Length: 67
Picture 1 (tube, rainbow, N blue to C red):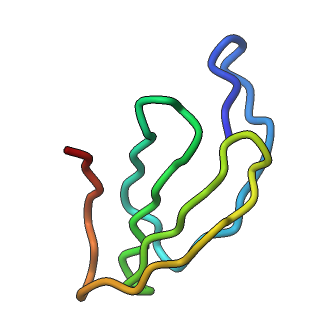
Picture 2: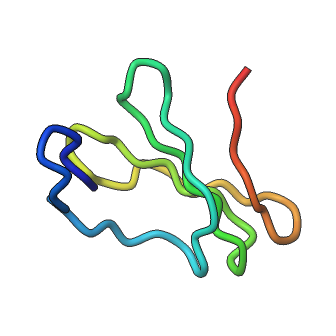
């Protein structure tokens, strides 16, 4: 996790293997991380920096986007 006011790393968050992309919700409350070698997407609560879910997806996810 990075504090955008200071550009300092504030927390290291465990996710799946080979995290390749991240997207943050418009509200800034959740971050979704595509884990390429785990074939999963990790969901992170940005307030607590805790993982809230791991979603199994297809082979080698390389991006995350919202509509």
